[in-house]
Image (cartoon, rainbow, N blue to C red; front, side, top):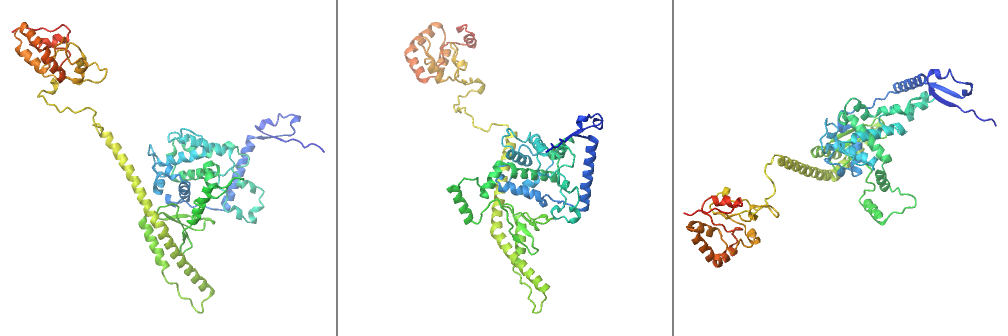
Length: 531
């Protein structure tokens, strides 16, 4: 058995093939011009196929009518992410964040949703916040576009109704390349240029330069990736659909929870089923606890637009009343000699009446009550946010302190001005004037009992003088001999009273004019003059 020849492909310039040796017979050189030509031809074939099977995807004029917005919101509600995103309380907040031109820092809803989605995809990513979410998200998208073979919303569209193609297209030799993510010969790095964040950054913009359709497509793709790759999301899906690893048995708590859900009629909390049908066989959907209802056709056929039909409780009540009124109407009488077409039309009318009656009853029983509670909850939460913002604004303009003063109020009034009073002692270890030994006692000065007690009751040399005694000494000081005699007489009587009052200074100083105060502070003793 002969060995198979080995074929090697090498991409180079047009001159590389001219210098190939005889040993390079098995080497096929594809120059860059040939590669570009192959890409252009494949692109032309794809565009021709799209023109032949023309299908224009409908574009919604309102955010509330985009099925991608409803799809992302249903994911947030069903997987319990609503409580983990700040300032996101209802569907209106989510729709508003898709159209706002700038970020509402520090708790922007759009950035908060992106941060939460990216943290589910990359749980090991630390310090992820609104300041760096754009860079991390752009890097994640580029990595997936370069290495992942999965289809994304930014890839070239798949031809419409590909699975229902007739024999007119099945015999094309290049049919298999229509579903490729890249054209034949296109480099993988070329696909990364479809990153929307990278494109807007090249224009000098950011996330908020994307229009609401581009933001909805971005969030939809992140939801698709979470449903496929996020371990936390996959765990919730496995629990709700009872997909357990092989060999694992369900616990008693899980069995009890499933039994309670089955008793309440809620078997799967992730599944969204229509509330019913109207007379035109349109499906009516409710995605959360709000009053928002959607209407759509058959979701298994294209196109199938999703339209919001009510948002407030007043609109919901009016819509329910119209369904109930039609459900209470009488069907047309059946003719005796009616044709098959007339009989089929009558059956259709009767079925529409019955379905709208059942729809009105279910909406009134299930949706109306929870919509009222949800509206009250949102109103309370918004009031809390408004009160917090009002408190922050008032704190910015407030000039006084909000806490009570820790200084004890002095209710003693001696008839002296504030400037005559000495400042209080600052605290332990404070170099206050109360602790300076040798300072004279001034008339009318109030002294601290705590300082006087620490300094021995204010007695120096066995003599104690309080404020009243100092004033009496000053008024009766006529000569120095009389002064000493009075001090000796006061050793027994005035000393005890000074200790009891605790209002003495560290030293007893006799003075007659203002010079005595300065002398005591300078440490030069006291100067006394006779009358």
